[in-house]
Image (tube, rainbow, N blue to C red):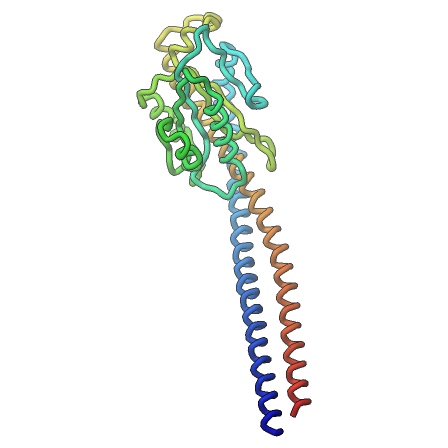
Length: 308
């Protein structure tokens, strides 16, 4: 009789130890996850602060850079017409009497992520253009930043002209835009017209995917509205066309950089808030699990004492 009681107590103790180990393992898992989420929250808060500082600088630089884009865009508006069918507020050049067969797309992104849908919206607009293009129109793509290349390389590998890397680490300069423009002019691809697709900064929490028109020298010469300007010879027109390309790229770089920093700041703020909510839930779950383990241990101790 005594041996049976000892065996029962031993089985009860072993069962209690097993349940306790299971409870402690659960507490350990919750504790590890809670610590991980807290570390992530620290990172997102730091990234938000860095993005806020970069955004303030980018917004100041954008005010001066807009003069470059407005000046070049006015010329294309004067010899062309507005087309807002694809994107609200976007401007497209007027087509000549016989439409050009070679088009160029310049996509303004960067190499860095964690900034919402800034890069995916540009890639989506480019895919929409390439998907709905006529069969007799050829498109080539210039990717400013690895994010646009990653989004289009799988679907349109043969249409990529070249890619510019190391974009987004430092604020864009006119020298960067000049290098990109020079690569386009020296690429050997004689395009007739094209677009620069970029994100136009509106407010801290909003931006707009917009298109800027591009025209080749021959395309501009064939436009009848060029007669509105006096004393425009071929040399002057060629120099201005090359310079305006760098102007538009620089302007689009600045707009996209400001939109990216503001979107990253907003995204990191949302991520920090979500991490805070998850920390609260995990803390509550941890406390409830710990309380259940303690209660079960007390019950097991009392039951063991009663059996003895």
